[in-house]
Image (cartoon, rainbow, N blue to C red):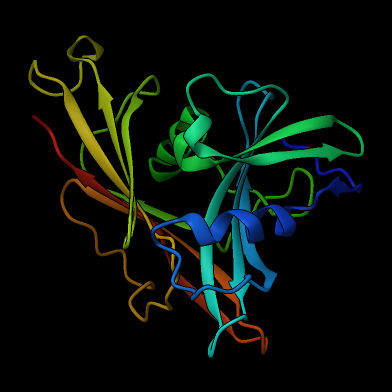
Amino acid sequence: MAVIHNTTMTPGKLELLAAWLPGEPWYVGAEREPRLSKAGGFRLDDPQGEVGIEFMVVTDESGDRPVSYHVPLTYRGAPLAGADGGLIGTSEHGVLGRRWVYDGAHDPVLVAQLLALLQGRAEPQAQSMTDTRDPSVTACFAGPGFPADARPTTVADGSQGTRIVVEADAASGVGTGSARRLTIEVARVLRPDPQTSRADVSPSGGHVTAGWRTPDGRACRGRFAVLHDAST
């Protein structure tokens, strides 16, 4: 169970993201400093209780029109080996001390729990309340299950978002003797999707849908992540 502490982080999340976002290939802003506000999101629990997992939405109002970004985040008490490319920065937490903040697409704990959410093995939690389920976050999944020990093998950031390839060994008993691969497409620039009320998934895919609010208070929903089967 993730415990939400009523405390401070220095620098704060929005401050860290404002410095990090312009360097990402999917950021659509011009050469100006982002002007960010929190617009929504949800959390997942780490079964080991060590890593904070948050799927945050921030809206940038520095341009001609607001743009909402989806940024999965993980919070760790020590650096994650081999993940320097995913490090957003460090911050001093008022209760927990120094935290290493990562782009969660590069963190295997977040990827594993995202797969668990897709398959109904994890429950989405409210962003700002302890031990409170968020029923507004929905997940659809079709096809054979994927083992809990699956691991991300590659993470690629592009102009359209982030692609994560996840693989399970043949020894896991999944598939027909060869490794099974899934591709998770993580949406970065969020757009309202009028079709999100439909559970339209392919025979071997899925998606996570959640909501956020525009600066004028309008409620929006869209797909935060889409899953595709890419078995070999």
